[in-house]
Length: 574
Image 1: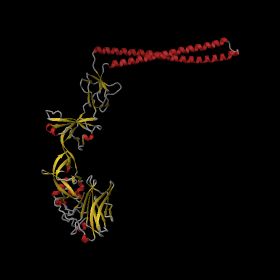
Image 2: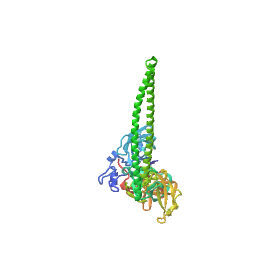
Image 3: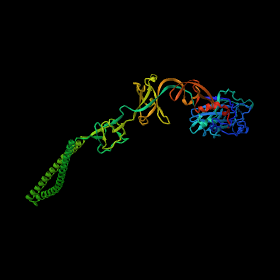
Image 4: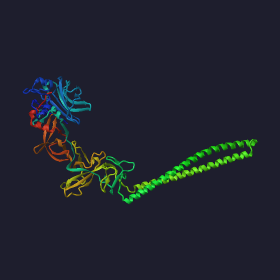
């Protein structure tokens, strides 16, 4: 959008608007009683002193990132021209001080300013060389990118007598608010658009554990707490699995049962000792048998060598038949003894294996007997231990919580709706959740994958409210069970509403007012009729048009300026 207005700006006075506001807004200060913009020397150096000449042109252009406001005198061929370019960063309303500004007059003249006169103000100077109609383009180069603004077509006069400025416009209803006053307060605007708007009903809400995601592990019988063998007791923050034994409860036993239990344990221990003694004896016999078997193996080797020697010498008549038979007998005897020892070793191995199996059964029986009087405490869900104020040996009564386990990966948000508001809700209403805290972070339930679980099925006769429950994922644990939240529930909706942020509205008695930026330093006061609100934006039923730029931050300062136009002034000196 481009806006052309004649300049009718006069002097700024030294008085301040709203105390310190103007002290930070004015570009220059003058001693009391001294003329401001009528000081010709000052105007020659830093700004405009138009006298009786034609008023300068003003161009206002908005982009998504920047606001461009330019003043320049009517253009004359062969005479110096000065474009005073004001740049505002629309993301924060601050003056842009790191840009290079280029001005193109038609295709023949290109002017450039590499540095700001002051933050946000760039004087671009040069001399037009060709008379006639020329399109003027402004190019702004910043570290964030390059923007091009088409200002329109202007006349370059052949001489000063034929130079013509813009037609005077009636600005009696507009409010002057200079850029030097906008920048310190970070004044920002947004372009009005049509969109779907849904009214919201604000109600109180609370974060609850999802059904089945919270468990209180309690003992069914009284007794003392016993840790799982080889493991410490669970502490706060520990993760547990469904079905995991968290601890045991040992209930008190009658005296006779305790005596019998002690006797059984003693008998099992005695049997275990006897098995250990027997196993030691058999292991010793196996060691001895293996040593003897090694000796027999050596003897067998020597006997086989002797037999081979006799067998070689006998055909030559160097060994007798008796010697041969003796050698054969020695080999057979060694083989027989080796086989016997192998059988002994194998038998001992089998016996030790059976003994180890018996010992394992005995240990199992002893452990089972030890566990006969223990009651396991089992977690019914997977989650995090959020309460575990217990110590081993502590006495617990039935029903007293030992461990509290919570799975907060998904939670419920319960909103309590007054019964007389229930009819205004949709069958499955939308909802925005506002978290407590100074930042008032909020999110849309549907946008994060949440959905309604229950919508006002039962009215509480005491509070006359009905619950609306939403379920949503909570992987980062931002929502804490028990946290109080504000819930904005969807009611009425408008498909193509003109809407502005709530911060854009200024109350003037019973009227709602917004300010529209019609030029870089000009604002129009609009009395609007409001409609529904979603808690963030407000519907405007009359008083605004699509595409206009509404002040969203700094509207109260513009409103204050509208009551003291003399203090605001009609011009500024650069």
